Structures are given as C-alpha cells and as structure tokens.
Length: 350
Image (cartoon, rainbow, N blue to C red; front, side):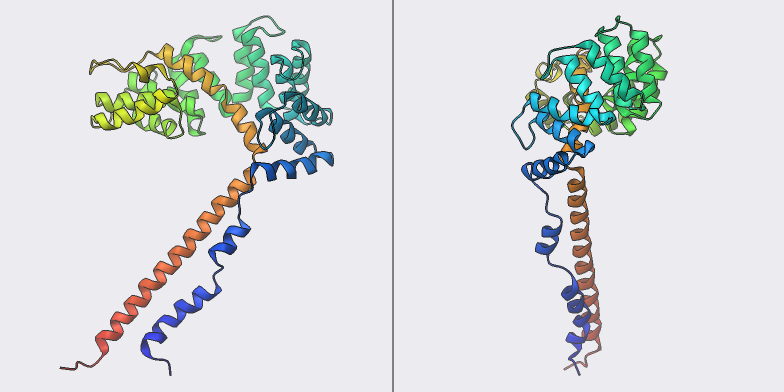
C-alpha cells in the first residue's frame, strides 16, 4: 500500500502527467511574425482569393511584413476589387481620392465607392460622406455627408457613430443637439472607439448633453487613455491635477500629462496653473482627436492584414495556461489540506 502522503498526492501527479507542457502549448499557439503572415497571405492572394488579395494590398499600404509600396497596394487591391470584393473597392477608391500609388482621380474614387455601397459596405458609405464633407468630386455639402454617415451608423459601424456624434455636437450638417451627440458618442464608445470615449468623457465633465458627472468623465477618459489616445491622456491628467472625479494626485497627473506630451498633445505641454482649469479647450481637443480618430478605420482594416486569428490564438493560449496554473494551484491546495488532515490523525509521540 502507498504511504499516506503519496496516496494524498497521486491524484495531483496523475493530473500533471496528462497536462501538455508549456512548450507544447506555445508551439500550438505560437504567434506568427509579420513576415510569416505576409507569406501566408501572399500564397492565398496568388491563388486568387479576393479577401487575401485585399489584405495583401493593405500590407503593402501599411508596410507590415514588407516594404511599404503604394504601387503594389494598388495592384493587389484592384485584383480584389475587380472580383467584386466590397472592402477592396472602398480601399481602392480611397487611394484614388488621395492620390496614393495612382494619380488623384475623384471620379474614379467615387465610382469605386458606389460599387461598394451597392453591396451595403458601411466603410464606403463613410468614404462617400467624407467626399461630400471635403468637396472631393462632388459639391461640398455637410448635410449630404451626414446622411451618408447616418446610413453607416445605423448599420452599427462604430466610426460612423462617432462621426454622427461629432456632427451633432458641432452642428455640422444637422442642428446642434448635445443630447443627440452624447447618445451617438455612447454607441461608438461602447464599441471601443477611443475618440468617442474621450468626447463622451468631455460631455460628462462639462455637463453638456448629460448630467455633469466627473466620475463618469474620468471613467471614459481612462478607457481611451489606457489605449494610448493622447487627448484622453491629457484629460485624465488634468482630472488628477484638478481633483475632478478622482483624488487630486500630482504624481498621476504628471504621469498622464507626460504620456500625452510625448505624443505632442497641446494640452499636456502647457497645462494651465489654475486649479479651476479644465485643461485645453474643446477646439484643441477635437483638432488633435480628429487626426487620430481618422486613423481608426485604417487601423481596423490593417488588423485584418495583421492576422486577427493569431491574436485570438494567443489569447486562447494565455487563457489555457492560466487554467493549467489554476488547476495546479488548486490541486496543491487540496493536497496540502489532505496532508494536514493526515498529520492531525497521526498518534501523538508524547
């Protein structure tokens, strides 16, 4: 018969013997490099897969896994667009609108947008709205721009929801309505759009469109700041500096304002000394936020080219390893408890 301590521990040892090693888990869930993703995507693109051709074109646009080459981006996006792939049609239209890899041609850009819109692609609806907002190939018309943004927003497109909030907040193409702005910002913020989270925080801080609530303002600033969004970092830093929604903390203020300053955010570089100051004005925030938020859709598109499946695999690997660790710790705790009971049952030597 096994000694009592070994009887107590053998279930744990049996469990550990059947668990795969950390090395094996890492091998299965190894994150691929950008170069590996590029090679895999290229193989599929060369076989004629439209989605891979679009992703391959985006890789050339962003320089991920390969040297940036707008000319090659156009080649591959066109291959995909010619197959009727709506995302590629919209992406190719943008290259024509802004003259990347091709001569600027608004009419051609609009033609590709319309092809994608016919398939219900919300990104192309945003692109058409931007064309009207900027007067690119069509008369400048803020009302028409908002109509296109609304079409995408009503499909649940988060960036379009942010644009709707911005339009209502500033009264661009629609009557100014801060309650409506806050409602749209919340829709986008709930989907993780950093600019919308920051803008909603500003509305809570100033009491525009919502009841003033410094704690809610800080909560929304923090969500965007933790993703590295400079206006939100500056807002969060000013909240700590002024004690709005959080305990006043000069160290935390300096930390967040420093992060924003590293990204050249104006409000972080020259923070007003007055304790009643709320930092830079809304105009400054929106000017800087606009340039950052306009990158969100590009980042989202690039995520597809970066291999989201691999990111999901990494998450699963981490969860799996956490589960293994939890099982081991729990088993050790049970074994220790059994051992203590066994010790208590031993006859006393005294």
